[in-house]
Length: 198
Image (cartoon, rainbow, N blue to C red; front, side, top):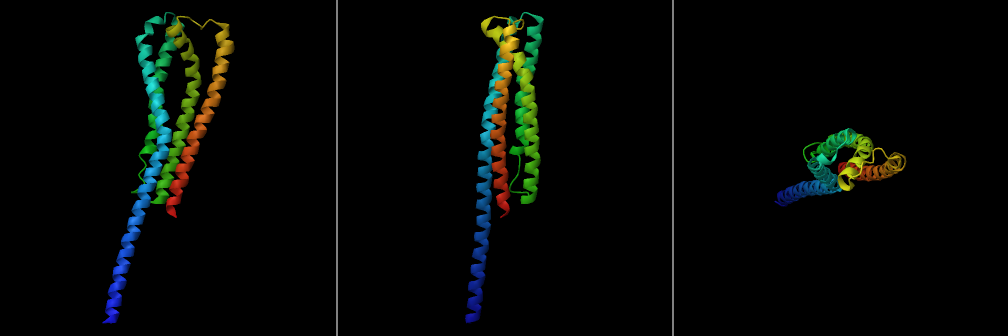
């Protein structure tokens, strides 16, 4: 009788431990998913804000396009408009894969493998967007100056010899800082996902 009671107690304890283990695994998974989303939001919010600014800029550009009265300003305006639409698309496209990562259904090894693929893709798209930003910077300045101030600076030596180089240097350091922040966030996410295997 005592042996059967002991066996029954053991089975009950074993069942409780099994439930506790499943609950712990589910809580760890939920915490990991929450932390992963928080890390991605550190990237997504600045990208979202930048996209809103680009789209607002595109609307302003279309509404003020009539002020661009020379061929070069009109070409710069069209190129700027394309960039203002293209940059948000690139931004959301680069984030799409990272946002869709399914932590709960895949194995840990596959989750990390897929994350690393999306991380590499995200960083490549960001580098492409940064490269495009240099051209965008040069074509946008004369358009904005004409729309806001009424001046055509495309024929100004000051624009080509001072404003363009200074803005390129600023963009270089700003883009390095932003890309570094993104890499840091993605590395934190990768370390966190790698810790799930333990």
